[in-house]
Structure formats: structure tokens, C-alpha cells
Length: 329
Image (tube, rainbow, N blue to C red; front, top):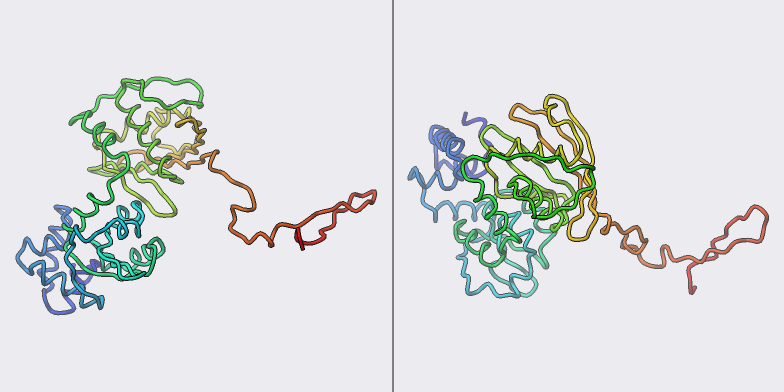
């Protein structure tokens, strides 16, 4: 198994001779079995302590290990990183030196994550390494999740087993509200509201063997919501299929449909696709907020002289148009 290891931290430690192949196998097996981060498993097995692990990562990245001092994280520092980026990339700004922001990440060995993050930081970014537990604590303090309390409270109501009843709602034009007492209806409404509030372009409902994941895409990146109980997978899929006027009894064939909902006075169109999997039906919703669609040329970000032309009609029978040049030139 050691040759197939792809975890960057284990690969780094093995290349430096700090752990052997047998230890790599043991760590990977425990990581897969328990779901604990590799860094945590290494500490639990007593192979290396946290300080040594952080220093190895810092040396590899050519940076330094810092302590996350919450008293030093001022509002000016917090403002350098959007809340969505902090939570999605699991990172926090720890200090500001001129226009350079020091960013500490839970997973600093992920080059793709760092590259994407660099486009969202306001100013130059300097990567540093810090205790993941301290980073998580700082994220929760300075970048609280939007609307997460209502989502968590609703999840708590379901308990260990959800016995949801489905009811027909008529045409695909549905107004979202929380008046229904059916937990699944409330849950689906809340997920859609949260996704639209965060300007998501699509929402993914993905059942797995032991879990049910809900993710939504914002600006090309996927955010994962707190996982609901696995028992919700089938009721949620059925509720969405009812809203899209699809056949809820057909679970072995892909289906496509459309949902039109009203959220906070906005008309939202959802294109829905279902796909059978080994653990249930996977659903993807494509979101179109009609009120957010702006087809004006100004929204393209081009300089005004590039499109602001005066157009005059030549006085000819065929009505040919002539562009006379930029306005005001």
C-alpha cells in the first residue's frame, strides 16, 4: 500500500526517513477507518509530536511556524479574507504587514488550494503553518457560518430516524415557506434558501454508503454543508422529484425536470437531474436567479469606450446602420 500513498504529509515524512512504509500503511488504514486527519493519527500513534510535524511542513514550504494569537487578529486583518474563503479553504489570516497578509491553513501542503486561495485574499499572501486546532477555533470565532444555526437546529429535530411523509404540491411553481410541519419539506426549503443566499450556481445531493452529502458551488468552488442523517437521502430526493413533477417511483432511470420557486420575493428557476447510483439517487440542481441576471454591457467589465458607440441609420430604403464612433469622440 505504501507505494500508492497520495497524502502529501505522509509522502513528505517517508521521503525524509521519519516514518517507514509499515507505519505509513498503519496510519493510512486508521485514517480510512476512523476518518481522522492524517496529522492527528500520526500524533495518536506517537510517531511524531505536533511541533515536529508543523516544522517539517514549514521547512518544506520555505516558511515558518506561527502561533494563532486571536488578540492580534484585528478587524483589519479579518477583512482581508472573505468569510466564504475562510470556511471553504479552512484558513485564517493571522497578521498583516503592510499589504502582505499572513495566512495559516489547516492543509498547507495542498498546492491547488493555495493557488485558488491567492485569488481571494485582498493583498499579497504569505503562507504560514500553525496548529490546525487553533486555526479551526479562530475560523469559528472570526468567520461564523451564515445561517448555520437554523440548519443545525433543524437537523437536530430529525433524531436518529426520520419518518417523512410526502404530499403533492401541484404545479412546479412552488412558493417556499416554513409553514409546513413536514421536517423534510422544511429541510429542503432551508437548503435551497441557504444556497440562493450564498449565490450558488448548483446544488449537489449525493448519497454514499454511510452518509448523505449536500454541496453547493459558488464561483466554481464546492462548499459542503453539515451532513444530514443518511436516512434523509431518500425522502429529500422524493421531495425534490415531487417539486419537479418527476416520477418518484422510478429510481433506476435518470430523470430531468424543472422547478420554479419563490424565495424571499425572488423568482428562482431550478433545472433538476437525477442519476441512479449504488447507494441511491444522486440529484443535481442548476440554479438560476432571474433577478441576478444582468445582461447589460456594463456588467462585462469592459471600458466604456469599447462599446459605447453612437449608431445612426443611413437614410436608405434598406435601412442600413452605420457606426459613427464612440459617443463624445
